[in-house]
Amino acid sequence: ELPSIFEGTVDLGIIGGTGLYNMDCLEPIALLPPMLTPWGTTSSPVTISQFVGTNSHFHVAFIARHGVSHEYPPTKVPFRANMAALKNLNCKAVLSFSAVGSLQPHIKPRDFVLPQQIIDRTKGIRHSSYFNDEGLVGHVGFGQPFSQKFAEYIYQFKDSITNPESEEPCHLHYDKDMTVVCMEGPQFSTRAESKMYRMFGGHVINMSVIPEAKLARECELPYQMICMSTDYDAWRDEAEPVTVETVIGNLTNNGRNANLLASKIIVTMAKEIPEFMHTGDGLHGSIKKSIST
Ligand code: ADE
Image (cartoon, rainbow, N blue to C red; front, side, top):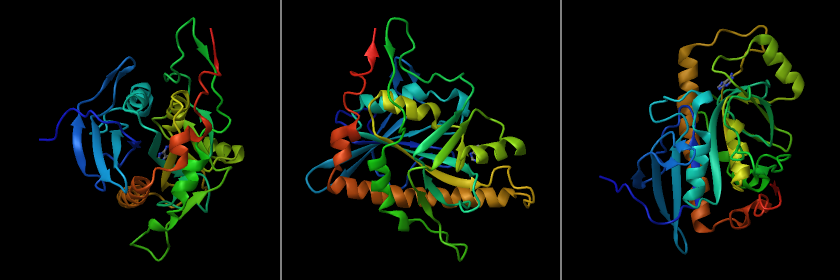
């Protein structure tokens, strides 16, 4: 019964990962059918939600990265269509969620991480640029793949994530060297690979941040991923076997915390749109400076 068209502009784009197919902190005002772009169709319908802020309405667009019933494996996600759709809706920043494995003892399952660096271990089989045609070459800077201003904005709400089942709190980890390794998958890593990623300096591992972060950069969109830890990956020699109950419990708790964190972020943004969304965190014009033909 929701309208299938939306004529306004969107402020914030959100991409949900495994275990996060919609956000109950959002009240939808429109449900756009999967959007057709020159790079294919978005992986899910696009849910538009509205928040009444101090001076105006704040709009959020939500896309489920793997589809509403998890039909796209990481290798086949239409990353370019998803990012192009958010850009086309006029989003000023993209907040992304992803389930990750932890490569560090202090990053416990159910903890969240705001990475600032990426190690790309995908196999080069994903469409990872909008500059794939001959005659137009573009090289954007990617030394700092995430928006530090956005990460700092999110970090102010670090106390909003909790673990109701244990005495231990959940942590939101953030510093400038926090690194997410992105592997091709769909199989998880071997123990030897997992240990190698630790030696590389990885903190968490997933299968989605590449090419999403690259495409956000080509769209000049401030981008930050919130990594939600579900497991310790394969590096621990004396690890107790993981149970399905544990993983499901972690995914459920992560979904709940993702909603708690997202609602804090959105409510605060709706009151006053942060500076980095006006300025693009220094990214405006970076394409213009990068193209040679
Ligand atoms: N996503 C969640 N856990 C993961 C792991 N251990 N490796 C890669 N991707 C993941």
